[in-house]
Image 1 (cartoon, helix red, strand yellow):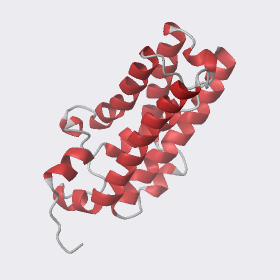
Image 2 (tube, rainbow, N blue to C red):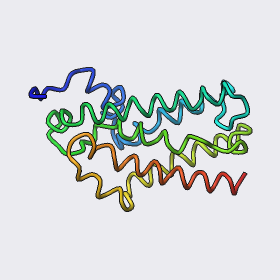
Image 3 (cartoon, rainbow, N blue to C red):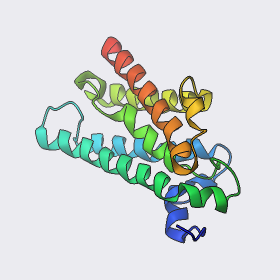
Image 4 (spheres, helix red, strand yellow):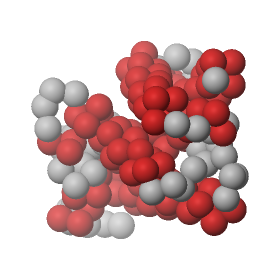
Length: 176
């Protein structure tokens, strides 16, 4: 790719529809859509616990689609973003947070979404845990930002997402 111009579509996707331009904490804004989406799916009766095959597949399918779409966005447009925003891993780019936030929301145990209160607590735990780990960047997340372009933008958030997923799984399985 010789042209270094970020298209409107690319910028919109990288900023998760403009949420990355909100201040303060654009990464926090970019982490909200998967949580809100998971909450909406739970309200529709689509639960991740396998209680209903179609509902479970729908819940995981929607989150998987968001995950893949925003991972692709980071990798595809990441180089352009760094030129466009004149910064490595620019703050306005929050597609990486959108992708990473999907991970702690998958494969939740049945008890974690069995009612409104456990579901709300689980979604809150997933959100706060991911945000904390994304900000702190425990090993090896911090080192992965060194990768160039979109991979450097994305990989630290995927690690934070996996770390948050492990914590959410442990806490929900012990607490509920």
